[in-house]
Length: 160
Image (tube, rainbow, N blue to C red):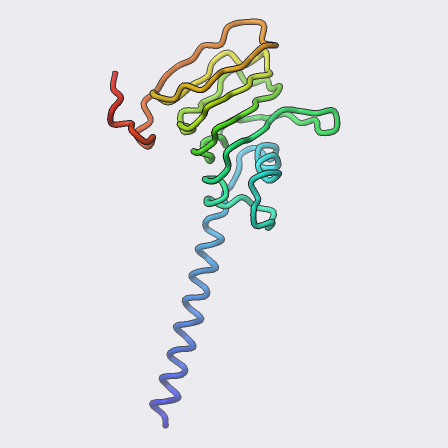
């Protein structure tokens, strides 16, 4: 009888520990953003579970991100560092910003990048990533730098 009670208590304790670990694991998967405007824009299309946060799984599945301004939604992006959180982006729109460069070397699946900021002068891409760059309103040239991203699929085939 005592052994049976201890066994039930043990099972309950194990179940409680497993639930706690699952909850902590889910919380640990929530991403932290350096720029609240990038997070806010990612939430528009990327918050698939509706919890008001972007998880690692949601960030990995996000295919397009629009950081352009509209008359009803004015904002300024202070850093592009958060773009590294979205490795599978295929389409990206960069709006007005005072930033002069953007590092997209972690976004190796990019197929299209629209640049609407006259301040942006340098785009860093992973070797092997060749998106269509669109910057019709830009008054100068865009410098494209290439860096090796060891995490990119097929990166072992590229070298300098």
